Image (cartoon, rainbow, N blue to C red; front, side):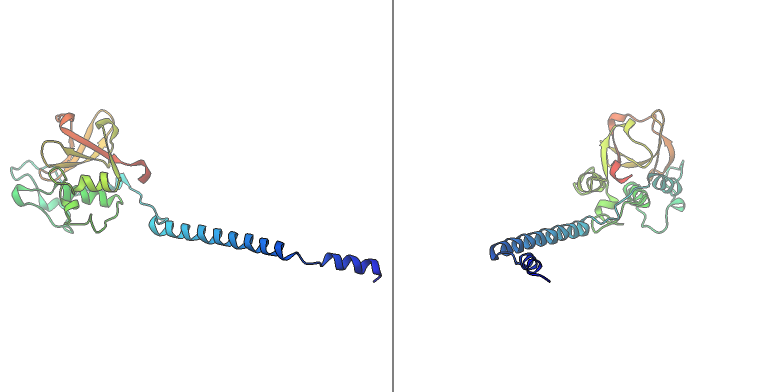
Length: 211
């Protein structure tokens, strides 16, 4: 090695000044903090909004609704032999099982239960027409799974709520001309909505985010 090479190597290995080192260390630290903060935010978001999102199979809900009811012609208005035996039945007061039945169908479609909406809870068995924490409020106002629309804006998998009294029915078909619904108490199976006034009912359909 001659003197020129030694001088070049010496120059090459001259360390950065203390000021430069401090600045680089500060920049590296800031970058590490940013990366860790972004990771923590992502982890928190994953905990709040799990990657497995809610998906609603409206046809599975329709099939459930049609399976567990019937077209009853007797004065009793219902036939529990057609109802799902795995759930409690509400035949008191002449039969008040409509919301219980619609909740079952929605659950069969994939909307998950929780501490508020579960079998026998108020949000599960009450329509929400005369109270503020029933099925409608939970599905529409609290969770946003469903939204209010028009008769023409609904399809199988949605539900209908009476305006002047407490009753809900499950939509099992709607081609824009003919709407069919199934219900409990009175039990109905693929019944036509043609004889009902649309102005006396509200229509709810699943938010597209869950389809």
